[in-house]
Length: 200
Length: 117
Image 1 (cartoon, one colour):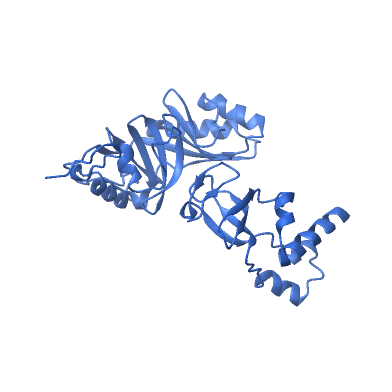
Image 2 (cartoon, chains in turn blue, yellow):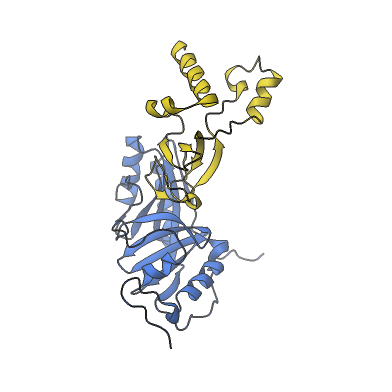
C-alpha cells in the first residue's frame, strides 16, 4: 500500500525568468468551503465563535482574524483560509459548532491551486486576462471576487495594494501558470498611463 | 455586447461573465396539477418558446460572481435591459405594462390567477 500524500499542483515547474512582477505558488494553505444562511443568526454566531471573525456579508469582501481569512464567494457561501496544518482542526471545530444548523462545511484544501502575484504592475498583468477594471477603487485590500480569467473560472483576492492571489481549480494550475508567465514577461509590460516604453 | 447587472450581488459585466438561461417564467404543469396534464400542456412546457421582437423576459446566471440565477427583462431589438429582478419574482409593474403580445397575455393570466389564489 502506498501512502496518500499531498503534492502541489505546480511541483517541479521551472522558476520563471525575465518577468516584470514576481509569481509564485502558495501551496501551504488550507481551505474550507462553508455554506449557510446569513439570515440564521445562530449559524452566523456559531461560525464567529470558531473562526474569531464574523462572516463577511457584503458582496466581494473578505475578513480576517489572526491566520484565518474568510473570502465571500456568494450570498450563502464562503471560503475559509488557514494554514494547511490547521484546516483539519478548524473543520472539526466548525462541524461541532454547526450541529443542528442548516449548513455545510467541507475541506477543499486540495481543490484549488493558488498563485501569488507581487510587484508594481500586477493589476495590468491580471487585466490582460479579465474584463474587470482593476483600477476601480473597489479593488483594494479586503476585496475578493470570482472572475473569468483567461477564459476559465478564477477567484481573485486583493491581499495588499500590489499583492494578488489568484485561485484556480487544480487542473487549470499549469494553464494559468503558463498564461501568467507569458503575459508578465518584462518586454510585454503595459503602461496604462503615459507613454508606452518601446522594447529595443 | 450586453451590459448585465446581477440583482443579487450587484456584480456588473458583459455577457461573458454571465450565463443566459433562456426564457423566464416557464412553469412545469405537473408541479401545479400532476393529475391533469394534457399532452399539449407538456409539449408547450418542453418545446414552445416565445420569440418576440421587442421586450423579452429571460433567465440569467451570475456565472463569475455569486453564482445565483436571476431574471432580466431585455429588449431584443435594442439589446437594452429594462430590469433585473429576483428568480422568484415577477418583473416590476412598469415593465409588465410595456409587455406586448404573448408576454402581455402571459402576465395578464398570471396576475389574475394569483389574485384568485
